[in-house]
Structure formats: structure tokens, C-alpha cells
Amino acid sequence: MQRDLVERARKGDHDAFAELAGAAISRLDSAAWLMLRDAEQAKDAVQNALVRAWRDLPTLRDPERFDAWVHRLLVHACIDEARRTRRHRVDVELTELDTPTFVDHESAIVDRDQLERGFLRLDPEMRALIVLHHYLDLPMPTVAATLGIPLGTAKSRLHRALGEMRAALDADSRTRPEFVEGRPA
Amino acid sequence: MTTNDRFERAMTDWLRDDAVGHVQEHLPEVLAVTTTTRQRPAWSSLERWLPVDTTFRPRFFQTPRLNQVVLVGALILALLAALLLYAGSRQQHLPPPFGPARNGIVLSSGNGDIVQVDPITLAHKTLVGGSTFDFGPGFSRDGTKLSFLRGAPSDCGKPDCGLYLMVANIDGSDVHQLTPGMPSLDWAEWSPDGSRIAFLTADPNGPGRVLAVVNADGSGLWIDPAHRHVYPSGWLPPKGDEIVIRRDQLGPGEPRVGIFAIRPDGTGMRPLTTAPARSDNDYQNVAVSQDGNLIAYRDDGDAGGFQEHILDLRNGEDRILPGPKGQSGGVFSPDGTKIAYLRAVNGDLIQLVVAPVDGSNDGILLGKAAAWGPDGPTINNYSWAADGSAILANYDSEQVARLVPIDGSTPIDLDHGNLALPAMQRLAP
Image (tube, rainbow over all chains, first blue to last red; front, top):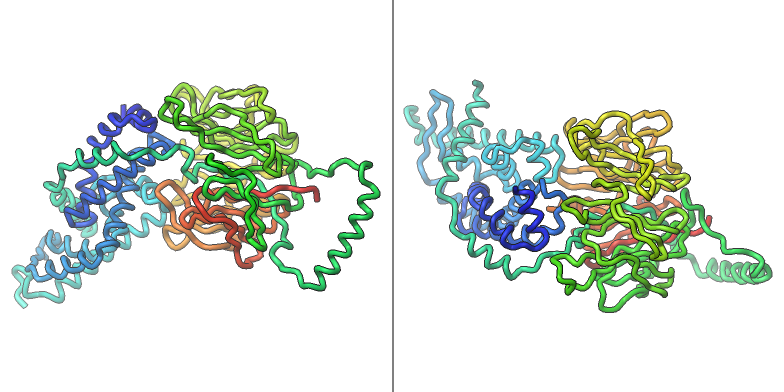
């Protein structure tokens, strides 16, 4: 079904493309939000990715790879957005750092605010890896293909990204013990 | 469950919860833009253009001194006089269809014209210009003819009017059209005897692409002689009467993907690979050595990254070229001793590598590294000089056609522009 739509859209059928875009846009919105943490930037990134998808669809070689291709376009659009507005994003981070956080050391499960802060400290490429694998549930070979990098590189980067998040969370909890629930300084 | 597992589980849960409520109602905005956005022609994607063998002369890299010029000039005059004595008694000396040759002229196609480029002065001379969009020059293997692609007018009444396959004399004269406008026309290669051109085109019966063959005089056109989706990689040396293809699996009862040889009329299909494919993604980016003994391909990457293989057709030996994971796109040098391919470097960049075919070392990196683009590697359309002294490549992200000497000397930017695809003429040694 999707293959047929892709084939029609490749040949200029805009209705077919509208159907494809409609089926994908919620997923793309969510993924873009997770990568960028800014609603307007996420919206721009999704729109740029879909407009490019329409424009370049005739050059897509394998219709079966439409989803992976659109994910790839989205990742590139998000990275472009993040780079374009890096200063703005830093301001948001500084504001967020003033918010109290909590860590449940008994269960060793980190608080969600801490997760967000750790995630924000990653560069956009690292965030993309995590979103593709842990949110969109793409297997690592597909993540590697989506990002256009070898599988081994994708795996090592994901490992590094998760390691950096953990290190950031550890540092975060050590430097601000007054916010740790149940463990007074 | 380990602490790591819990951490990843917590993160996945957070991502899912956090994504809720961030879906935006902007599909109509997107569609309003796409409605007024024109689609890119299928042929404008550079990654679709496969390597072709071309030529280059190493002495172009050095500027001669004045006294050398005078001396060489005198010698040339003397030789010219001697040659005139034999004029009329000799036929034109042409290169053999395969193997090392001498380097001839350099062509490129930046911004829609076929231009001849002087690699020393970088002077450009337009061979085929005008209002048409022409690109992708290629030479017949004897260097006497030129082929290229031309964007068909968009008023054919179909969504994709495709491309014309064109031929001309080497000086750009006698331009004529060989095919009607054909969607997804891609990769065109002259037969060794110069009588036919094989190319790839859209399957007229549905999605996918098929082999096509046209007589070089335009007298016959055969579409899909193989009756299946294929990716051709060239005419099989030394006889050159078969075309090497990567064949898709048609159905469950069919053999898996593999590399085959087939005659241009679609008969005589025979397997060149004997080992079963590791997966449907195996046996990609196929290239054949100029003696017809070796095939290069990349595997499916399931071993932790793509690996470049050399398959010896004489004994079935299949070996992996050394080096880090993330190598693909091999093209053999004219003498068959070296291979050029792309290697992943610094994470998500790629760079040209030249390495010995025997695998005795993992080769040297050449030229600039470049990024992967959304459509594939941005270093593409690379090929060897006829004498094996340099690689020609298109650096898509810079929109540059570049000559990269394999001795490590400074690369030369030959041409700039969209679809600046370089090609070089082979001359008799």
C-alpha cells in the first residue's frame, strides 16, 4: 500500500504524497520535538523535511526505503535547525538548570527532569541517535542506514551518548545535593 | 535487570511520555507549500550515477619549463614532419577496449553544458551548449565518440518526461538523439566495440529499474532484455559480449540476489557468484576488473559495517580488503593492481582510498573527506585515469569535479556547478 503511494507520489501525484505525509507527520513531529525541545523549531524542521521529501521524491531509488529516507531528511533538518539557533537553545538550557530536580537513588532510576537535562547536553547528532533507536524503535542497522553511517559507528556513538548522559546526570546530582530527595546535604 | 537496562528503560519511557502532546496541526501548511513546489527530476540525483572508466595523463600535473617547451616543440615539429611522410599509409591508432591507455581530453558538465577542460590552465571550451540541460559525458572505449544525457522537454504530458541519451563526435559535432525521453535513465556505458550502449531506465511496467540497450546509430532499442530488475555494472572483459548485472530476486522460488552475466539480448544469463547472498542487501556496488578476472563488491554490512570484497572469478576465492569497517564502492585501476573506493572516516565522513588489490595493505587516503548526504555519499561518480595516475571524482557537497592524483599531490578542481560529472578520453598507448 505504502509502496504504491510512494510510486504515485514519485510520479507527481500530490494526493498520494498528502496521504504519505498525513500518515507520517505525527511521528515526525514527536521525533523533531524530542530532538530539538522547541515547538517552533520542530515545526520548521518537519516542514522542511516534508517539503524536501516531496521535491526530491523522484530521486528516491527504492520506494521500500521511504520511511528511512524521510527519517534521514528529518534528522538533517533538525540538525540544521539546531545549528541555526544554537544560541537560543543555550538560553533555554540555562533557564532549565534553575529548576529543582530529584533523584530516586533507592531504585537507581533517574528523574525525568534530570533525563531532560542530560539529553539537552548532547549534541544534535547524538540526540538523533537516541530518538531513532529508543523512541522510534528502529533497530541499529536501520538507524545506521538512516544516519548514513556504518553500523559499528552508530553503535559506538549510541554507547557514547548514553555514557555522556549518565556522566552528566552523575555530575548533576553531585553538584546540587540540596535538591536530592531524602538525602540531605 | 541491570542499572544500564533500567536507565535505558527509563529513558525510553521518558521519551514516549514527553513526545505526547507535541504533535502539531500543520499538515495543511506543509501541503500548501508542496502544492506549489516543483519536483526535482529523477535524473538530478548525483548518487545515481555510477563510476565509469576514464583517462588522464600524468604529465598534466607538471608545468614544463621554457627551455623544455622549446625543445619539445622542436621535437614535435620533427616528429610531425616524419609522421607526414607516413600520412595516408597508416590507419588511426586506437586504444584496446580494456586495460591501460594514454590520457586524452577531459570533459565535464557543470550547469548543463558539456565542456572540455584543460587541467593545467583550467580553461573551458563548450562542446555542447545551448538552452538544453546536458550532463554526464562518457566516451566510447576507443575514444572516438561521446555520449551524454539531455533533459527532455517537460511538455510531454507525463509527470516525468525523462532524459534523452545523446551521442556526438568527440569535438561536439554531429549531436543526435538515440532514445526517446526515458524516465530514470541512468548509467550509460559503451560496448567495447562501440556498436551499442547499455543503460538503466525505469521499468515501463511498474516500479524499479531495468536494463536497456540501444545501437549507437539509433537503429534499435531493447528495453528490459533481462526481464527483471537489475543494476548493471559494465560489459564483461575481455570479450565484452556480456553485461555484468546485480540481479534482484523475483520471488520466493528464485535464487537470492547475486551477480550474473547476461548477453545484451537477454539470453545466456549465468551466475558469476556461487556463494549464496548473506541477505537481500548483499552483493552491492559491483565493479569488474579490466581483465575480467576479478569482481569487487560490498557486502550487506551485517558484520558491523560495510566491507569491500574481491571475488576471483577464476577460482571463486572471495576475500575482504583490509582496513576499518565502512568501505564500499570499489573501482579497479586500468592495470588491475589497485582499487579505489570510499572509506568511512571520523564517524560520518567518507574519503577516497586507493589500495592494492592483493590486500597487502589497507591503502592510502586521498583528497578531502566529505559528508554523507541525504541521498548517499557526496563523493561520487569517481573513476580512474586511463594510465592509473589519478582519480576523477565529483564532490557533490562542494559541487566540484575534481582530479585527485594518487601520488598524493594537490588535487585539481576541474569544474564547478550542479552535475559537474567529469570524464576522460582513452587514447592508444
